[in-house]
Length: 429
Image (cartoon, rainbow, N blue to C red; front, top):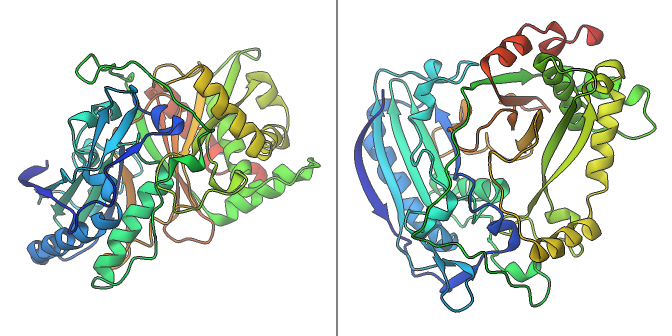
């Protein structure tokens, strides 16, 4: 449905400030995961597409001056075996495409269709391949009644917070006609690493790269209004001595519903994982503008019987304890232990019956106005999808609403869809 018309390389408007940046342990843990694929849809008049594109390209070149690692490549040092970002201004790839028979309505259905996947580049690319592939590829697609602006960014050099810092800065330059961007990205990995830390993963840049092929999945977006989430929070706090947050209550609600949909035996274990942004949890705090990976995956486990028989306060309380306890001492201990025994995430290595929450409704997604108005939707590509993967986005109407993108095998998704207590909990009416 999407036709690629033109590819070009965009270079920073000025030379990079430094030559190379060594990847941290949080970066290195991501080398066998996929690139991040996130994009925004805009209801923009299609007849001005060429002028839109040239404006995007000009401001992209300017924003790369600040975000210069994105225009580099990965390199493995022959001296210490460490993996670095080589800030050599090789450039980012910019793709112009058209999908004149595809409308915004076709792309904003609850069920994610194959047409959405065609809006992104580098399908299946593994972060370690950044030794030869661009670290950032942008595809701008002219639709029947709008424009899709989609980014594919190497996850070994940036997490979700950094991804949206770049996206926000780029749209800010476009919207304000080149005014100074509000973010000053920081690349100092010593803010995270213990003194003298070093690791040699022993990976060959020209060697075999492991590939992950997920089972057949359905991907669907579920919208939760601020009212529903507020009621879930109220319910979760009724029987709990803890202070359960809105997102913990929503996560607990989804955990229980998916466990029901999986039809597990009462004694079967199920795991909930959360990718936690550790910037504000470290002492001293890592600045919010730090560009890199500052996330750790943490988990909690319960039996299917416990989730199905106990009130919402039970799984919500487990999540509350898990997240509240993940502070400076625990985070730094995990970093030290990683250097003793490095672990690289693999998408086929998560626990059986796992749910994994990624992204965040706190990221500024709908604030990305390129001068055409606010986006009408957030969408993801196929990257990093597996059975139980979830991504949380803010609802477009704001006010605390949330959209969850959930990936499940078709029979499980059908069971979830038919569960009346999932999308419209009767206990909250």
